[in-house]
Length: 266
Image (tube, rainbow, N blue to C red; front, top):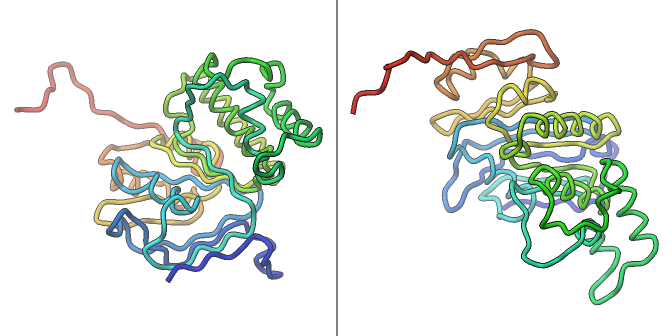
């Protein structure tokens, strides 16, 4: 039976943690991985990597209470904000409207936002450099801008731990740099971050710790520089990846073997 620890139940030890997973089994009907144990502290960034179908998004959904765990313990010691891969709406919400949605707990059902709610929303927008977009139609923003607005929504709600599902997957190179820099900035201010990615390079640049999902329902967890080695990444992806100097595991560059005319046989 999974146990969920409310935010207000904090021990002296847990006060230094935002989240712990203990022997967590997760999946949609059957487990996608062997039980996982990990922890996230304030100001730390955890990258979850693996090829398609290994359960990265399913694990985030379980941590965010979208899915129930199959077994094991999830102990949450802070408010969690979840940023999905895509967030869209057909309604003409302004950017400020979207960010105010993060204040739903404080505003209450059928109540209007108070001045302090709007102040918190604008503070979150300023924190991400988006204050000039407050009155813009959310639907008219670029994908990268929408991603940042949804992050602002969670910050306005007081999230101390952000779950980011493939935050750079649909972004151009410049926006990828913006999001990765934002993650570093938020972590420097004490926010914990868990993000999924297909990009070992991104994990090597910003992650303190890594959870690498491997074939055969296996996984490796630990400090990024110990987990994101060329050998482990080859087991995960089947591609040779070279490491060069950088933060944590460093800059991890795929070494693709591409030959003109080198097509797989049908």
